[in-house]
Amino acid sequence: LEHADYDPLPALEEKPHIPYAGATVTLAQDPLEAAERFYAIANNRRSVRKFSSRPVDVAIVERCIRAAGTAPSGAHTEPWTFCLVSDPSIKASVREIIEAEEFVNYTQRMAKQWVTDLRPIRTNHVKEYLTEAPHLVLVFKQTYGYKVDGDATAKKQHYYNEISTSIATGMLLCAFQCAGLSSLVTTPLNCGPALRTLLERPPNEKLLVLLPVGYPADDCTVPDLQRKPLEDILVRY
Image 1: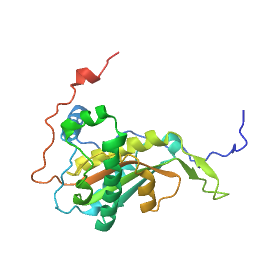
Image 2: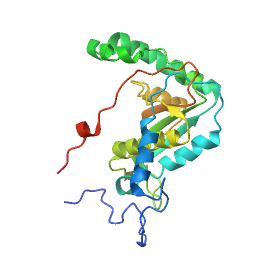
Image 3: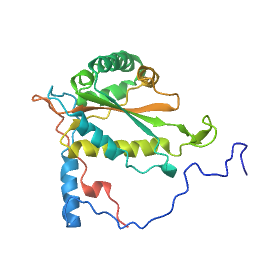
């Protein structure tokens, strides 16, 4: 059954298929050693909420975002936009928007159990890291795009846009960790429209997550949590 807006031409330009030899750049020649090294890097990652004033070269963050942009996506739509905020005044505006909404979230919107479950993490509506971190990366998912040829207003469907953008975000976290930077995944509840307006993003973009990025403060602490062992997360067949 064809829909009225069906286009017989695919949104993705037809390209020749070329040979692919597999991974040629790895952390070690031995695959097992490479996997172990990557695990060591990933396992060293923690969610940081207190950042140092030590500056971070914006070029490092940009290279990490470039790596995130290599993530797989549905029909190669690449449905993501990474907004890099380094301007102190804009960071202050981001914090003002988020703290105002988070106060309402913690006192009215969030269930009592939710607030209780967050107690060991020691979070509340005050988000100093939004102005302390040298940079903020606001990750937007593009719910649809526009076709390159023909009618500039013709929408292009972005399949699995949230899953694709979430994968890219995970790759961004790994890139930060590999570069020696720390971050935190935050999901500013009920803040998306205001932040989209602040950053003048188009209506097809929806805020997915916000990542502060920098170096941990000297007095930074994290909960002494343990990760599940492999046997608890792996089922072999």
